[in-house]
Image 1 (tube, helix red, strand yellow):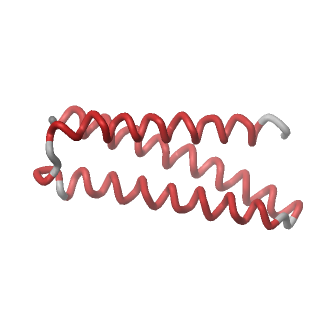
Image 2: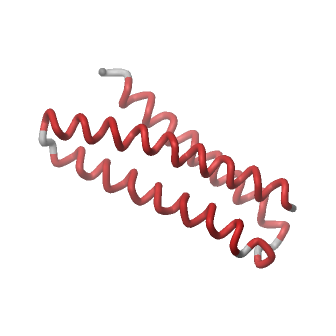
Length: 96
């Protein structure tokens, strides 16, 4: 059980790192363009950071409360989120 929670927390930490890169890029884009759409992307990325911070905290603070059969699904959700964030990073970096 602990291994899957550790994997999920590690993937969440990677998500936070990738989102920090995206937020920095969006901040730079907003500074240059003042595009309102970029503010929406920054808000979205910020909410995902909050989600991942809460997830990592919850895994360690409330570990005994998690049902073991659910852990593979948590890992899957975080990996799917990483794939989506990675795709977003790829299309954000490409035009630069």
